[in-house]
Length: 251
Image (cartoon, rainbow, N blue to C red; front, side, top):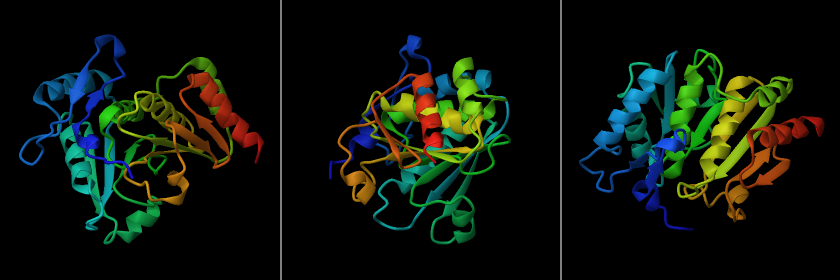
């Protein structure tokens, strides 16, 4: 299994604002320092003041299992993010001790971070694994989208996604060093926020590489829709919507 030290060490690019070429660095020496640099915290706090409308709650599930190398980091990162805005709250649960909550949110593994708000009160948007590297930008935009009355999405795409009236599960497999993965995961999350029939799971494959469904994945982003339609690589918002609609026609 590939080494996953890069999860903490690699850069975090805020692809939400590509014209600004903002780069967020995860501190390598995290034992006594914050994961997010101070200058990046100031930038994010300013963006949250502009973007956040309704309160967003980040629910994190961790475990005392020593095999969970990044459970503590998952808690750290959501606490640091939530400290940047009074519209971001955090709730922490134990996978072993809070079984009622595990079942309520259908949590399968850990660490898990669920993005909820007035608009989405269930586990429609969940990150499995630490959302670091390039994927940190996806977490930020998912928070912003969940805070809005409606996520920012093209009219044509919105028409397609709004027309889905049966359950659809989108699973996006990513790595923290994949430059193209945040686009796929952010689009999937927006679809789930827009339509309550859609759920989105973002899974970081280096942390869960021993799972059977992940072992054979060679390229990311690797996308499954209802465990049937498989899409590899990056696609436009509208193309992604067509894949999702196609899955409903196969049911």
